Length: 270
Image 1 (tube, one colour):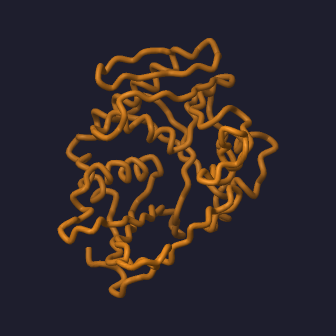
Image 2 (cartoon, helix red, strand yellow):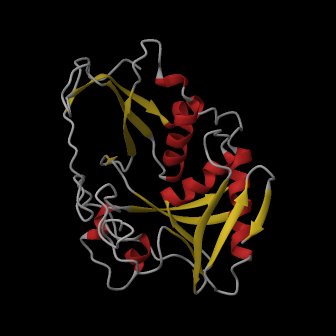
Image 3 (cartoon, one colour):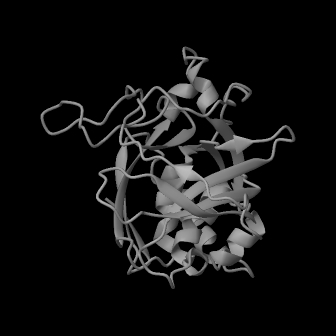
């Protein structure tokens, strides 16, 4: 668990957004998206994480959430936007590209399974098929940071520390719950996390220096998140129940908005 490498690494701040159709990570070796099976639940990882966070005991997370769900044939989609939504920056109230909202990378995950999907954009993501506690099968689009020749996937994170010499990220269980969930649904074997602090000067975008670069296995992240020893069963079971409940209430094929009240532990169809 010693920091790797020993010498600090310098991170130069860059305030320019990455264009929505660009990504600096080379994903040229990834296979084409798989075709979702009948009665599948199809989503991207961030949407599934937003649902799982309802059950992961994060006090700062709002108790109520709404999201859009659609059915196309026998496939259930959890959406960031409507089907066939064009990629690009988020729009402001005037319908213009919002300067502070760069939008999505690549293209919407629904379009990646279309017959006319751009094969070059398919390289940005990898699809994982995942069974949630044997209850419901998920087909999840995951953005992958790093993959070796053996197919082992690594999640890469950078974490800024507050101006507190006593602070350590290794006790921040709420943060590692999110990382754990990302690794779980991305079938990720390891985590590389660089810790850095801001230098005390008046530069607008000063260079930051990593104080440590650490490697953790999935099992170690699971322990840091407090999700080991069976503690993951309850939130994952609730997530599976929520997904199955939504599936059973969208059988008529109409697009609906669902809400869930976490404080009452009761599901309500809006």
